[in-house]
Image (cartoon, rainbow, N blue to C red; front, side):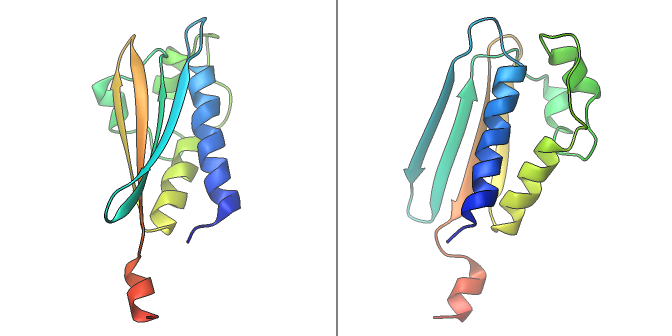
Amino acid sequence: YADNDYLGEVISNLIDNAIKYSKESVEINITAEESERYTILKVRDNGLGISEADQKVIFQKYERAAAAKRSRRNGASGFGLGLNFVDQVIKAHEGRIFVNSTEGEFTEFTIYLPLETPSDKHNL
């Protein structure tokens, strides 16, 4: 069970970022699969990538310094709240989000949403 509106905003934010930090030709792959315990969503692009150092801070509120360097339009728009919002929504769903990226090649966000949350177990 999940909040459709908030998760829609999460996916929209990840797609917007993939476009914003892309090369001239944008390619975005979105996949969903289910494991024994999780729904796993992935958003992968062929964009500019994120350095290892920046991957450690991109979910922090107001984090834009690294984003400005990555934008193909010479500066990122926004306030640096998008990925923090994404992180907070996923945590509110008792899930986890991870980023994997190689500069100049790709960025992939992987979201794990539990099929059954600990609070669900108390309601059974």
